[in-house]
Image (cartoon, rainbow, N blue to C red; front, top):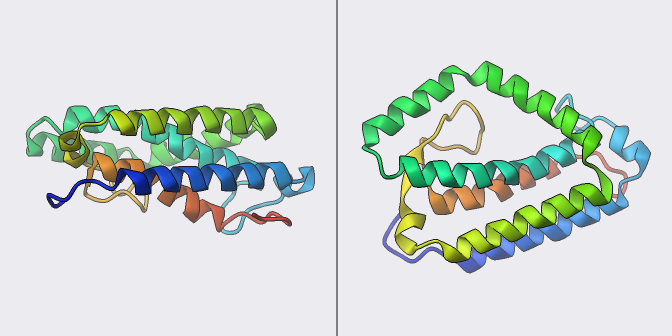
Length: 178
């Protein structure tokens, strides 16, 4: 990242937009919609909605990791990212099954409440980040996710959740999509 201040307002606004869209999607989805397969994945719409939310939970965990790894020498981060990339197949299996199981327990109002708490925590964390920390970054396992880049700053990790959300929103096959 260059020396310009991070546009926190833009990150806050995209979180708020995603939250409003998520509420509309969950609120309007019929039971038949939730059971229907998505476009291009093995998940149902209900499982995909959980997965879209789960992306923001991942962001919360990644923030701590980036804060730590961003302080270590660059070669350490590269080795760490390569080691994670070596575990891509098990990661994808856990990612898939986790969303299958998560959708069984978290759906409807329970899912939107958890989404709201997660987004509120992200807003609070973003407001408390020093500018220097938002510029610090780490290497990522690029085979895990199409939105992971070789090196991402903390600010880019905040943005990642919405990139992930928007991508998967286009795969939903809800009859009344928001």
